[in-house]
Amino acid sequence: MNPLLTCEEVLRFMPDYQESMLAPTRRLRFSLHLKVCPPCRAMLESLQAIPKIFQRAISDDAPVPSTEARSALDAVLARLQASGRLTSRDSGSHVKRCSAHPIPSFVEQAVAAGTADHPLRMMAEAYRAIQAGGGIGMEEPFLPESVLKELPPREKWRWTSTLLHGCSSALLTKDPDTGASLHMILLPPGQRFPDHRHEADEHVLVLSGQVEDSMCYGLAGDWFHQAAGTDHRELQGRGKDVCWTLTRLEDAGVRLSGWRGNLQFIMERAS
Image (cartoon, one colour):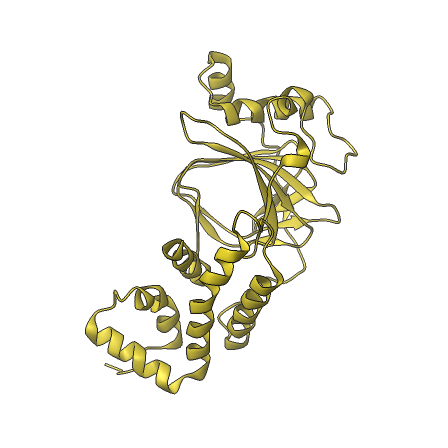
């Protein structure tokens, strides 16, 4: 057995190392690797500093991450890129248009029966409005008046920038009974949401623009349902226009894959 862990193993075990959860033998091998590997040592130091910076960045009086937080993350990403652990897809896109994705029949049935929760019902109303031609040519995210009346005024939407995702989101409402939440998501052209796993059901309605994953791209009016347990490849804004989506999430949310998942784990433990 090699007494030293590989760089990939060290990256994978960093959350457990910080939580003192590594077995004694593995912790010793981890420590030995750090002594002889400056890049991994610098990576650990950066990750140890990031949670406190992020906590300040996402505090109630700072909804948009600070320059300090962005610089800290940029430093980590640069080290990952330089070490070959972070790769990006070719900027050229060859994916084809997805077939039209209508509202799922079980959602229609729940809305008709009055059993759909508040976020799902509002998504269904927005879907019908788009199918009727609503939102064409609008620069702001389109929602029908019937939905806007049930939400806080636009100027009170609290936007947060998600540093790892390259997008911004605003929590619009949350159902007190089911815990499901409704979010407005802004995905600029070329910005990407990394590989992730859906811990619970997710519904996404494209309001405007285009969004693509590794298989196909969708347009305004497309409704995508990701079941719990689904592994989803990287998403990115497509074309020249900002992509707006209305997204319903259940409490469990999504779990990022790879090294981003490790960082997500660290942030959750630090919160």
